Image 1 (cartoon, rainbow, N blue to C red):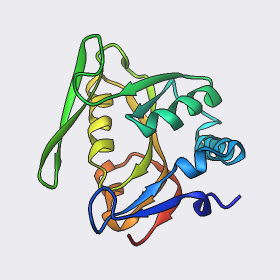
Image 2: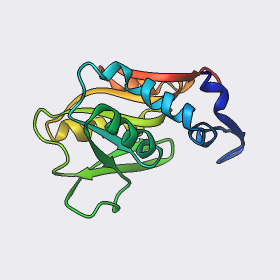
Image 3: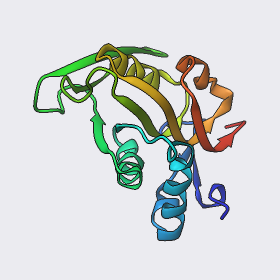
Image 4: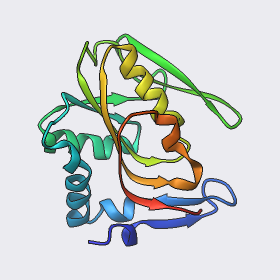
Length: 173
């Protein structure tokens, strides 16, 4: 199945000059969504992680489904102030300013094997911050899975030695 053909490019969103990769056209089709989840899980099936950490918000779509497919739990990674219990926070730099992600302090324990999931790898800032969160709680990142990678933004470099699995790559905007 040509999953890339099912992703809609929305030009000039959210700002002029940006070509937004809209995955809603892929996930609305049951067969394509099923194939995407299965393919994103494939490298991790032989040694499943203890949990899948999905980054808000589209990482929840894939991360939750992947956790079920892999027979693991799911850990939501959210923007600050969205989780109800005690959290840990990691700040990361943006082009103009900073942002942060949080997870519950008790979400990851020592030596837990965690798979990071999001829909898109762009600059890598959010994913790198999430990997730091996992490690700060003594978890072990076993990999990072993304549906889409914008290779021209070099985000993979920010993830260090964490194995990265991507289904679709775009080399230009």
